Image 1 (tube, rainbow, N blue to C red):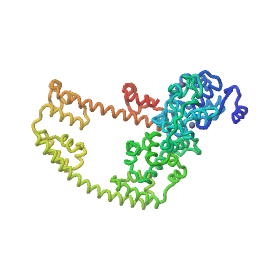
Image 2 (image 1 turned 90 degrees about the horizontal axis):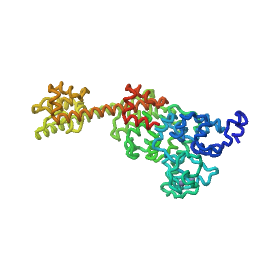
Image 3 (image 1 turned 135 degrees about the vertical axis):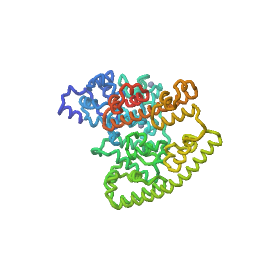
Image 4 (image 1 turned 90 degrees about the vertical axis):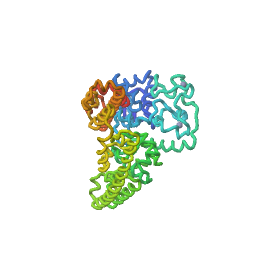
Length: 533
Ligand SMILES: [Zn+2]
Ligand SMILES: [Zn+2]
């Protein structure tokens, strides 16, 4: 009815499709496109896209991100259907990603939803049979939901008649019908969900409905940070450490920290869901507006003191360092905020002083231990008749040389043995030269090594063992450089996504300071870009 009014009022009817049904609650964008095309007797989705006004070269966007095409689709579609753009956005993942404070640009969205979505159609035959007109729900895209809670049945991920995989967009456009066998998807087999499965499915369904619902008010700028604080508060209420949550969810500690501190925007929806599951809470609790407001409101000095005190105790209990940074992370407050309160400052200083005493104590103990360990390692090497080198000692102690050098007494020990031991043969000289080059970060070429130890390149190349040792070191350093480059590229992409820009190869190559082609020819980096598409 709204549509009729709309058409009468403002726009001439010829621009609007003759039949323009409106989206159903939670209907997916692809489902709506199929229904529109089918209702108007179009032969393909591509015909509809052309009517929307999307040029041919942009049409792939719908296939690449079926339920979240490029922004250009919505205005055109609003035009020919009389459905407002805001309503059309509700058929996509727009609100969901906005809730997490993420960019709604398709690339960023892909990253956020990467493990969460099914790439082909999943459906509940009972839902299709009970709805008139039948349509596909956006919820069915989420792999976390094994079934439909309304009917208590498992979602099907293939045609119930012929077993074909079903595409999200079919040609010719027809809903609830298998394009392969023309079977009716409403009459597919139904398997009931067990009670153990039904309960969590119900929780996840509620969470997703909440996340997909349109936002009531404009978004907080630091939304993601506030959600992180809320997660942290829920975790602390259960007295779980970051390490404990990481082992419960099977994730890396860095992912948990990213959820709470939002440093790199790497955590995906799947990560958030696993985090909430580990805390036995729902995402609806995490997004509880009143609680979020509470967290946003500044705490009084007394409240802050209590939190700082609790954080110090928690760190001690968990055997973690009491540092300003760790306390801030636990309390979830900026340094400037903590500085406002003299009482809090006093408490912090006291906590840190205690820590310094404890650290000095443990550092001394540790140094004594290490001195003994180094002595034992030297003894061990000597009795075996092996050469005593700093590297071999470090290997035996199980630490790096630089970590050992932090302790003055250990450093003195290592310096003493640096030049002792039996006379060097060629291999040992080469190994020393390699160690030195690695420590200095200089090149590992045959020429460089030859110059350093005063032995000709020919001799180096002639000894197969020496050659292998050099080659191994070269490979290692090459691999290290490669890894660093990939890291820098990842950071550049994250930086661009944060700014809401499309992370194209030229832009990234500019940030990284490497030319376009050299990045493109690296398979690992190429894959990184392909994963963004
Ligand atoms: Zn159902
Ligand atoms: Zn079929």
